[in-house]
Amino acid sequence: MKHSLGVYQMRYITVLLLLASMALPAADLSGNWPGTLETSRGADSHNLALSQSGAAITGTVTFSNRKWDIQNAKLDGQRLTFEVTMSGANPWVLSYDLQVSGDEITGRLSAKQGPFPGGKVRFKRAK
Image (tube, rainbow, N blue to C red; front, top):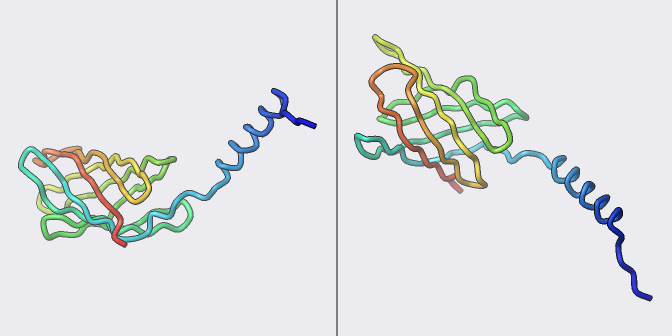
């Protein structure tokens, strides 16, 4: 006897699979993410050190031989955003708008103010 699924059964299975995939936990971004920053001034090494506990993400960004704490980090699906405040006589804020794809994070870095030209960043999780 041959069995085939009806249209309603296929829709039911599709909905169940969709709901099950939404229930999967998000990837943990904790770890060291070395990478590069490309600006109009050239390329520079760039590093993210992230720690994730549930939805809370903390960490640091290191480049130009300096380290800064990330602030206002948010992970919305695969989009990771955060800011870094560069201290000094005239502090300024850098904004990161990134996409997470497995063990790679790519996106843009822009300055809210200050002389930084902004650019493209690419990180790969250290194993």
